Length: 123
Image (cartoon, rainbow, N blue to C red):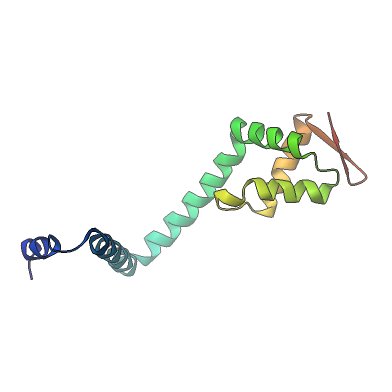
C-alpha cells in the first residue's frame, strides 16, 4: 500500500475517523521512534523537565503569581501554605515538594511572608 492509496482512502472517512487515524499514526510513530532510540529519548526528556521546573521557579512572574494568589487565600499555618501552593500549580502539571520549599524560601527572602512557630505572617 502506498501513501497515495492511503490518501485516497482517507478522503472517504468522516472527520472523526480521520482524527482517530491521525492519533493512531502519531502514537505508532512515537513508539517506533522510542524503540529505535531509547536512551536518547529518556535522557533528553528528563533533562528538559528538570530545566523547565528550574526556570519556572526562577521566573519573577511565578513568584509574583504565587504572592498574588496567597494574599487572597491567606493560609495561616505552614502546612496550609504548602497545600495552597500545591493547589496553585495543580492544573499546570503539579509541583514537587522540594519546589514548594524553594518557593516558600523565596517568599521569605523577598519579605512577602515570615514563618514563626509554624504560623505564617504576611508582611
